Amino acid sequence: MTKDNIPLIERFYNKIFSRKTKMPEKDWDSWYTHKINKKRAFLGQETFKNERYYNLILETIKRVTRKTSFKGEKVIELGAGSGLASVFLSIDGADSTILDSSLMAIKYAKLNVSKIRKESLILGKIKYVKANLFDLNKSVHIKNESFDLVQSYGLIEHFNDKDIKKILEIKKSLTKKGGWVVVGVPNYISPIMIYKWSKGKGNERYLNKSKLKSLMKEVGLKEIKVVFLPYVYTEFSPIYLIKMSSSIENFLGRMGLGSMYLAFGKK
Image (cartoon, rainbow, N blue to C red):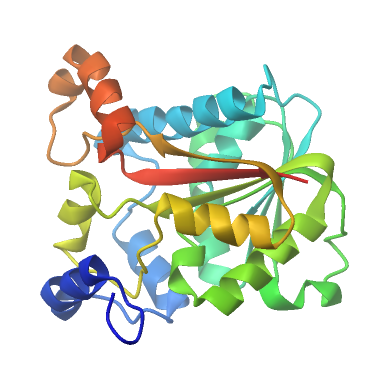
């Protein structure tokens, strides 16, 4: 650690990758407009890899929460992203809500969902809400203690500790008693993340397992568990290799090379 408490690995990554940042970190409308214009959605060659990635998230959620199905349960994703984490829970029977403050992020998620519906996949109900995460009391669409699972991926690492705790407290307030809070953050030693950041890195912070556990414990969550997502191969791996060596990838992922940490806490 340095005197300002920034871990050495974070300082190193910021130094070698920050100059390659392609989008203003806070300009999410521009970021998702870029994705839409480049057709970076659930299309073409990326279909197999996206299905694999989000199925792994769903399988991990089921394993940790000990659920066999999300049929009839209400889930919400804070920070739209691609919306696909919500989609795969919806395919499993959940009633999903996707929330973001960026209109273009919601539009991007809708495009992905529309593509999947055209593929004749059966989806549960999916609702979209444009709202500021830190000002949800003004939203008539979101009520406290109304969700069985509250999830986010690639969100909290963009904030300082104080704001992360606020986000976790908000997530906890949205969760029913006995429900789950799920947080996904990038793993700094994953070859996937190093590859992606070589093309452009924002202000993502380094959050390790112990830090995640500590933050979740501070807001009163219980049965806290942090696991690796066993997703190691991606853009630089041909599909035939992924299919042939999925068991090797699973082993490498569980050994610590997976792209994300998934942190779970029960209310």
